[in-house]
Image (tube, rainbow, N blue to C red; front, side):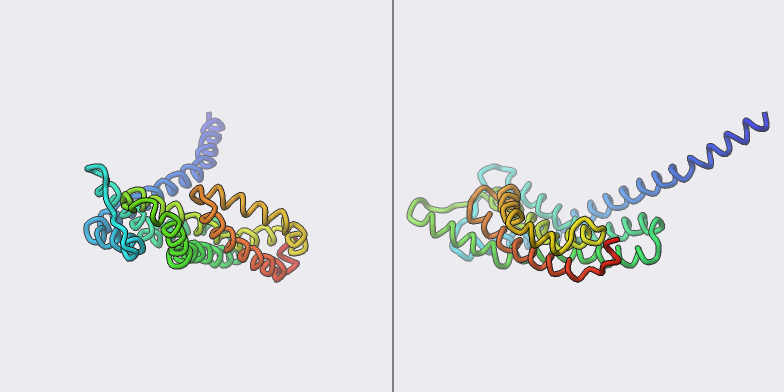
Length: 249
């Protein structure tokens, strides 16, 4: 009887760490979701109109009228924009929650490297979106407006315009993760600078295929995305050559 109780206690002790991890993960998810909801509501009430105006500025400055074709379209679009803004605004809190969850499982040296890599990833993602919005998106708009000049009077739906903008910008944030991806694969010995150089012709083809998948279905958007990705790849080759040999072991 005593041996049976001892086995049950040992089994409970073995399961308790797993249950603790599950509870901790659930707490992270609940807190993160609550933070996003609160940030979204605040953005909707205090920044909703300003965000729509800021995102619509590139097209309005070119003299194009923005319309909505459904009764709820304008409100739904504002909700979508506020949700994206809320996620961005709440991201520091969410990242801290995630960091607090995984930190105990890392060694001190790993914590330092992971922390740096984590913030570099976030920075490159935001940089990719800003680069798209500030540089590439304006060039794409000018091209399409010139191409359609004289064919019809442009009046864009607010929902389709914002959707196109997001579908254009988010892939740039993802594409700017190439240096991080190459650094990780080189650190674990999966890639080398010499191998990346030899595979350059295949990578170029893969980049254009990936750009075709991630961007809207037009050659201009795909090309404007592929070119920065090619530059990032060459930067990644340089980064790979600087990774210490001991990190590849």
